[in-house]
Image (cartoon, rainbow, N blue to C red):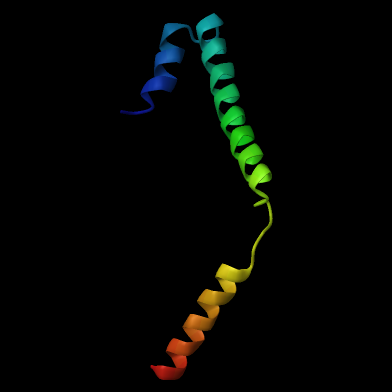
Length: 68
């Protein structure tokens, strides 16, 4: 596929209006999706960096080492 959409915008107009629209459209799409994800996790109260899954995996590894 070789970056079809990026090549599409640059082949239509290398540094003109179509390339600019595509460029800023992609920036808005990525930033917008990150903002939506941030607002979702913020509303759910999940912006913390929870250590419990890491500690659980470490305990499981220690138990396997003791038994194995």
